[in-house]
Image 1 (cartoon, rainbow, N blue to C red):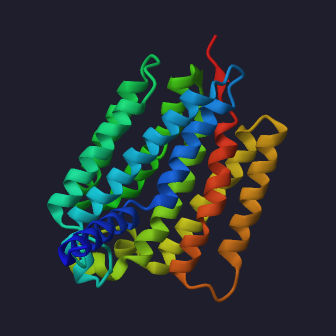
Image 2 (cartoon, helix red, strand yellow):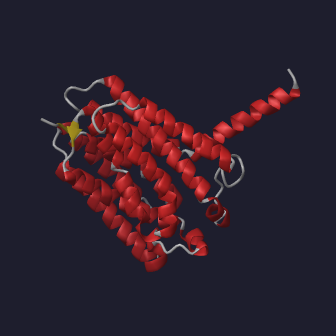
Image 3 (cartoon, rainbow, N blue to C red):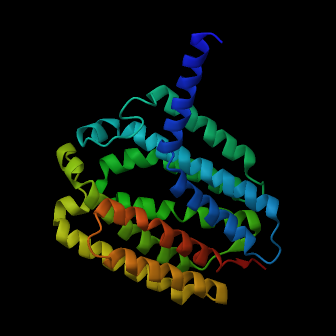
Length: 280
C-alpha cells in the first residue's frame, strides 16, 4: 500500500487517541452510569432508554472535557501539563468539531421523555460555558462543577419518569465540591502563575486540604442518610470505606490519591441513583 495511506491512518489513530484521552473516559463513563443506573433503579425500568441516555450523558461529558482542554491550553502549557491539546495531538479546530459531533450524537440518542431533552441541552450548554466561568470566577468553579454533576441524576430521572429528594443533590454537591478543592490544590502552581484566585491560592494548601476533607467526608456520610434500600446502603458503605482508605493511606502522592477517588465516587453515584422514586 502507498506510504501516504499509512501516514494518513497513523494521523487518524493519533487524533482519535488524543480525543479519547482528552475526553476523560473514566469520569465521563461514571456520569453516564449514574444516568443509566437512575433509570434502571426505577420499578418500570426499560433497558434501552437507560443505555441510550447513559451514552448520551457520557458523550456530553466527554465533549465538555475536550472543550475545557482547548480553553485551558495556554494555562496547561504554562503549568507543563501534558494533555493532548497542549502537546499538539489534537488541534483547536479538531477538538471543536469532535465536541460538536459528540453533543449532536448525544442529542440524537436521548429518549424524548418529558423534559429530558431540555435537561440534556442545558447540560451541554453548561459544559461549554464551564471553562469561561472557571476562568472568570475561579473561586466558584468547584461549586459550578458540583452543580453540573447533578445533571446525570436529574437527566436520568427525567427520562425514566422519576424524582430525587433535594437531600440527594445536597450530598452530591458537598462531595464534589470537596474533590474540586483537592483538584485545585493539585493545580495551585499553574493557577498561581496564571493569576487565578482559586480557594487554595487564597487560603493556602493546608487550610484548603482540611476544607476538602471535611466537604468530602460530610458529603460521603450524607449518603447514609438519604439512601433507603439495602443495596443503596451497601453501595454507600463501600464508597465510604474506599474513600477512607484513599484519604488516609500513607505516602500517596496527591495526583494518585485523586485518581483513586474515582472508585468511591462511582459507588457513591450508584448509591445516590438508587434513591430515585417514580413520580405519581
